[in-house]
Image (cartoon, rainbow, N blue to C red; front, side, top):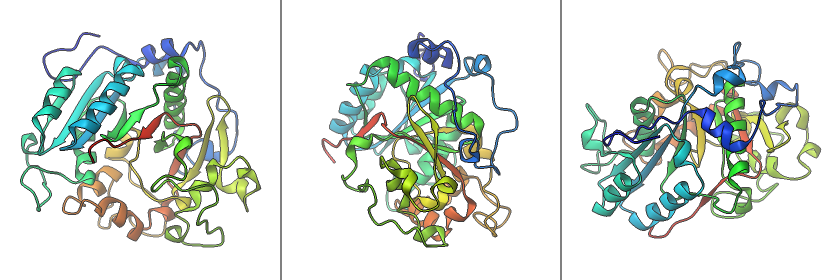
Length: 333
């Protein structure tokens, strides 16, 4: 749709994704395993019908910090893949921005926001105009209005080699799993296994551990071809969608990461992890976005404090796109 003056909004809806995915009916969630529907305790009692899904909206959030080359590379790919065409809203959060980053965001129809623009912002105390990733995630959820959000740091580019129809099916299947009760959809390309923090199948797994923080490296094994041969596999991992392939598990077997994820905005802002024998975040409890904001003073704090909080014990439902649609790619840091 037409973009109006600088607010990043267009008229696009999920029906545009459905049309480009060339599907007539919902993408079938083929497995009755509870892991495919919110891992029981997070199951959505009234998921949207396929026709209702078409009326919902997807937003895209980008986050950058003085890396215009990397942002340009990603922005071009988000555009070429068709992602921006189907985004009902585009938001770019720029930490202490390079002028080229501001121009890029405006060129591609994003609402461009700096930390200093956000009312009552909790900035990273080490800088004048910077927020940590945890705070950025919270403000992204607050500032957006769409039902679903794909959150992308500047160094996650779309796979432009993938046919558009398949790319859109990946997004659609992830949305259906969010509707069933999943909290996090991970969309990083499996082709990058073995790079940086995305380890190879079977690497550093700890299947005997009873504490989530000791099991947080298990999730790499869920990309393996023989994943169903893992110990106690049927209670840990389920193939929920055959085409495109999606597998679901819980936070008991993974670390926290915002590397190329899609979420349901209301879940991130409002829902609080439950079970786990303790109140998540302490006090009256916190949503994941609120917990992110609580780490405003430490860039590594969101991931680190999710480990110390042992988010694994709350068994939050996580689903992975087995193939993935985003690559990690840095040009200038």
